[in-house]
Image (cartoon, rainbow over the protein chains, first blue to last red):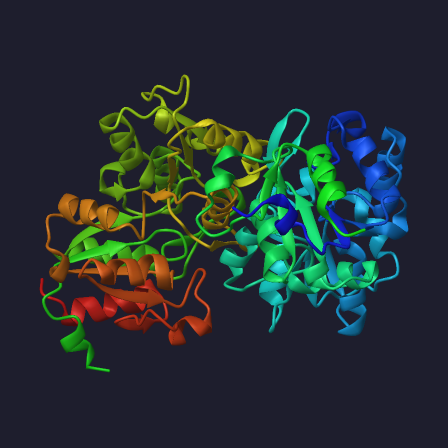
Length: 270
Length: 270
C-alpha cells in the first residue's frame, strides 16, 4: 500500500462518522472512545473542514448533539448531516405522507410532515419499537399501496453499544422488502445522494474529502463509490475480517480516530 | 394451456397445504374455507394418496391437528409433514444445539433437543416473540459463532389470518441473514428435501404428485422444482398478481380446494 503521505495528499475536508468513532452509544449517554475528544478538537483547530456524517436515526439531531456535548465534544447541530432532515426534504418534494416506523425519540424530526392517510412508509432505527405488531402495521400499509414506497434511513447491519453489538435498521428494511417484494429507497449512508449533500454542506469536492468510519460497507464503501477516500477505525463495530472484505478495500486502517487525526495532521493539505 | 385431463393425468398423490387452503388461521382457532371440509373428505375417500404439507411453525403439530379436527377436518398427526420434526432430525444428525427463536407454543416440539451452550440458531414463525430483544439475542448468538448456522423453518413472506395479511418468518430470516452476513438453511417449503420427505411419507414419485397451495413461490414453485405439478388456489394469501408471476407458472389456478378436488376426481388416476 502507498505511503500515508501519498494516500492523504490533497485532503481538505473530513467526514466523521459518530457512533463507533467518537463514542459508543449505550445506556446513560454512551461512552467516549479514548482519544477522540482531543482528536476532534485538534481536527477543528487544524484548518481542515470537518463535518459529522451519521446514520443515527434513533435520536433527534438535538438529542444526539446534546449527548455528545455532554460527553465533552465540540459539536453543534448545524455541523451534522443525518438522515431525518434529508428524508423530510424528499417527502415534501414528492408529496409523500409517511407512516412512521421510528423510535419515539425521533418522531419530532417529522413534526412538519403530514402523516395522515399514508402513501409511503419511513423506517428508521426504531429500536424496541421494532415489535412484531409495529412491523405488521408497516407491512400492511405497504401492501395496501398500489405503488409501495419504503424509505429507509440507512441500511446498517449492526452497531456497537457499550453492552455489545445490536441490530441496526438494515435487517428490518430487508424484512419488509422481502415480505412486500419491493426495494427500499435508502436515505443515509451509503446512498451517494447523502454523501454528496454532506460534501456540499462542507464545501469540498469528493476527491478532496476523506470519510472516517467504523463500517466497512456503509462508511468506507459508500464514500469510495462517491469518489472520496475512506479510512476504517478499529473501534465501534470494526471486526478483524473487515480488513479482508471481499468487495471493499479501505484506503487505510487506523486503530482509532486519534491515529487517523495524527496522520491527517501530518499529511493532509491544510 | 392444456386441458385439465392432460394436466392432471397420472396423478396418484396429493400434497395439501393447510393454512389458506383448508382454513384461514386466526383468533379463536381460525375459520374453515368454504367447501374445504367436504373436499378433504372426498379426496380421502377417492383412493388418491393424501398428505398435508405445511410450513406451520408457530403451533405444534398436536395443537394444529387438534384445531383442524375441532373445525371438522379428517386429519391426524401422522398425516402431517411440518418443519419442526424435520429440523429435529437434522439437529440430532449434525450434533447441533440450537438457540430457539420460536413461539412458546412450538417449543415442546424441541423437548428432546439439547439447547445448552448453543452452536446454531433455529428460527420459526415466532409471532409476537419476534421482539427487538429476541431478535438481538439470536443475532448475538450467531455473531459469537465461528461458523454460524441459521436454520429457518420456512421462508414464507406473509400469510392470511382472519383479520388480514401478517408477516411470516421469511422477512425475519432475511433480517438475520443480512445483519450477520450469512445464508440460512431452510427446513420446510420450498426446500426440495422437505418436499421429498413428504413424497416418501406418502409413497409416490414426484411426477405422480401434485401440490395444492396458496403460495405461488413456496408451494407452487417449490413443488415444481422437485418435479411435481402444482395448483394455486385463489384463497388464503393468493393475490391476482400471482397469476402473472415473473418466475413461477402454476400448472393451474382454481378458485378453492373444492374446485381442485372436483377436477382431480374427474381427471386424476385413482
